[in-house]
Length: 153
Image (cartoon, rainbow, N blue to C red; front, side, top):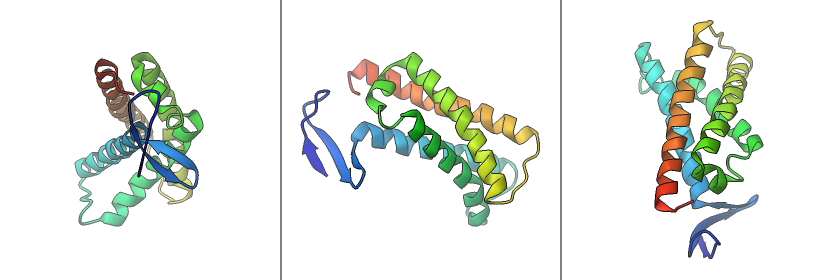
């Protein structure tokens, strides 16, 4: 980790890697996205009697396509390359996150059926897309409100 002066704050922590840099806000948002998305899937599994600790492979096979779909579509949509701008505007955050999740959920369903060979009954896409919107938009809007009120990116 290297401390680098930025225009938005006195100093920012940046993790340098092969693809460039990722600031603290981007890392926080990406980790939060994955945690909330994985949590949503795991709560759904628990409600259907699947215990992730007893059946870790089943849990991973359900979580992985949606996390991969989210990370892919979020990267294409610029949610991580323009994280500071997206993260502080509540309307922009809500709109961008909602559109990104709807696309990412569909990618997740395609990956789930194609890579893992799991069929999807009709209510699951509706439930997953709807609850995913609530969870991801809620988390991202909550962060945007916090960032806006504290003056942080």
